[in-house]
Length: 374
Image 1 (cartoon, rainbow, N blue to C red):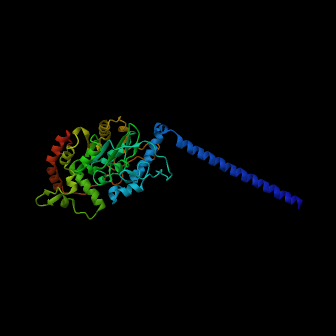
Image 2 (tube, rainbow, N blue to C red):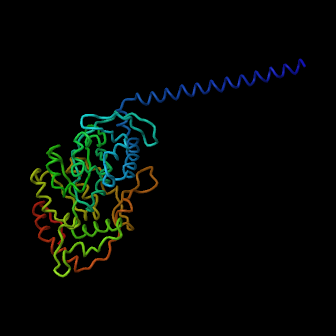
């Protein structure tokens, strides 16, 4: 009995010793975890700007989230969309002058600090045109380390202007000194009120218009709408008021958008021609590096985006970005881009070309560029 009691006490002592060691290790691990967390949060923000690779990886995560977000135009109220997706690039705003502070979260849902950089009104806006190549241009620009852009289209100057300029500013990503804030909403170019509203914000804003052969653009516009609404009437019935007379129906938005000269006249009432850059949608496909060189010069940026960033995707029929270092695949625009166009009567297409010809020539004169669509 005596020896048995000794063994029990001896075993109990070993168990107690192991438990003590386990809890000691837990305490040490917890101590180091909080020390490291505090050290990271207290590190000078300048260190992050110097770590270009880490910053680019973080920005790529944000871009992916931006691309996954639904466009505000698909929702009845853009404010509810932005309020539900408060991230490091967007803060919730309840009313002009009254900001609801909400702690931003990282991609994995963990709260992160967001005192990095400043939210500014965009110094440059891609204002048009729909189906001209605006998304490609924005994605190409976002490679540049000195460009920060909103991923989704804000539609502020055409649909949500009543939300106020402070609401708009809070949609912008934070930027450092020397970086450019940008956004793109192609419908601005054809919105009558947009020029005066943009000028109210800042009459020095740089404006980029991506244009494309208006006939091809109209067919592409129709193709996109048809993919969402298979019961859409034929292109011919929408483009022509009367098939026998061949009169073009300019009330159809797909046709009206291509009247570039008329829309530009509206903008030139508020902005000088020097504030515009007209990018060829065709050359953005055939020579993306060349067009991007012009864009970077216009924005006052160093020519960082060049031939080395692109390759031509034969399947899609347009250029894609080569895969970034450390990535498993290249970056191409989504499935909604490069859709095959439906067959349309050559006579209808020729009638459209004849209709657009005088407007195209007028646009060439106004912009100082011959885009060769005729």
